[in-house]
Amino acid sequence: MASELVRFSVAMPEDLLMDFDRLVSKRGLAKNRSEVVRDLVREALVEERCAMPGVEVMGTLTITFDHHSSDLQDKLHAIQHEYFGNIVSSMHVHLDAHGCLEVIVLRGEAELVQDIANLILGTKGVKNGKLVLTTTGRSLWG
Ligand code: NI
Image (cartoon, rainbow, N blue to C red; front, side, top):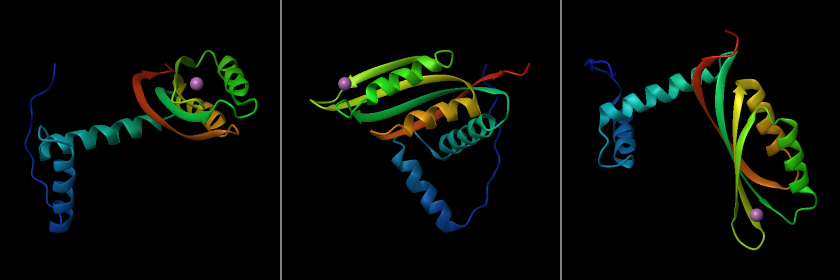
């Protein structure tokens, strides 16, 4: 159950407030200053929690690559088998005749998830990619 809303006032420089209002308007009609402040606080808390040792995180890694690129697919496949305990699922999308997009879902301790992502991102032939982390709220160290 969501807890009750509490009001507080915030002071900030006028130019920062103008930039903030631009950000609020970019997030769509349904968003107002309060909702965007809440979103930003939640994002910061998730980021802080993901940096804590022993915390279980979920990661989604999105990569793009050319499937003609030498033995790239074999290498990506081998990494995913090596870390089968941390790789929950993957989805492969054929973008066109050559291009592929893969979304890999990872689960585990933050540092390990980051290491596996770096291994995949660093594989020769991976064009670009990004790892997004969130927490499960569970600690792996009890
Ligand atoms: Ni493909």
